[in-house]
Length: 135
Image (cartoon, rainbow, N blue to C red):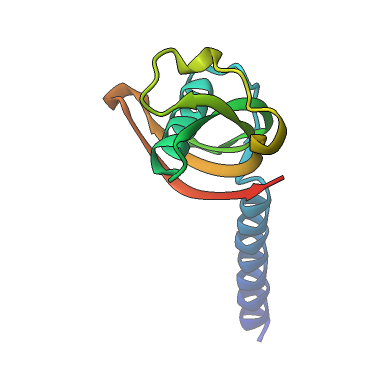
């Protein structure tokens, strides 16, 4: 009887440790990072380029501000909040990084959340998830 009770208690303790670790890992899946981390900066540039390539508008958008900057623990998956603004430049223009923002009736900004999987040693980046809303 004592042995059965002891096994039951040990099993319960192991289950609690496993569940506690799992819950802690979910909570801590993404951690804050500095916005100037090399691979994060490259992932932001990739996300903005992909947004412009997939956007049906003729004008490009440029990065205005990086909000949240996070990295998934033990991976190179980045989570980012980006604010972008519509520029006067068209997709085929050169030197898009210095394009002024459209003013007046053409002014438009979007807030986007991106998850980017970075494999910089293979020069490979991919968007895992993205959501953008006009502001």
